[in-house]
Amino acid sequence: DTGVSQDPRHKITKRGQNVTFRCDPISEHNRLYWYRQTLGQGPEFLTYFQNEAQLEKSRLLSDRFSAERPKGSFSTLEIQRTEQGDSAMYLCASSPVLSGQPQHFGDGTRLSIL
Amino acid sequence: DQQVKQNSPSLSVQEGRISILNCDYTNSMFDYFLWYKKYPAEGPTFLISISSIKDKNEDGRFTVFLNKSAKHLSLHIVPSQPGDSAVYFCAARTGGGSEKLVFGKGTKLTVNP
Image (cartoon, rainbow over all chains, first blue to last red; front, side, top):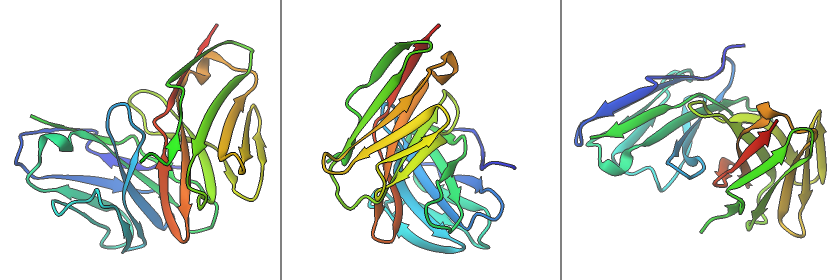
């Protein structure tokens, strides 16, 4: 069973640049989630999709952040005009639609803003 | 405000003994609780969960207890093994149709041989 895959694992960029991350969920998982984790904190919810529909967005997801899941399979998270405060681990998770099923996480993309 | 709190940043136990990790929450609408384990440079790994309508769930060496009146849950690991050394996160689902998980800050468990 292939787990959640995230690419790239690490991204270093200069402030003001745009970055895009990709997440491939566990096959047949209809739900896909994005979280952000900073040092010493637990993951914080950003947004989630059921199939291609984005059903919930956190207030943390500012105008500079956009997530897509165009065909209900992989998802991308784009951050425009990156800021120092965007430095974090970006985690993707997936789960089936069945009630009471846990979210399974990928190993994340670590973003460092210079 | 932090809705899920893990008040112990770290815990150290001897191999073979019991590890008890605690978690408190404030939102009575949470309907599902989970524990995740995280090793460095890896994503969180699901361990065990419990529905808000239950008070105990057991899976091998891991047992989760839920006390709704106290808004408290705990994870028991018996017997503890050195490979259990990791950061443990408590998480709660907000319910009401939301799938959002709210996480605590984590407790670093060290199991000494």
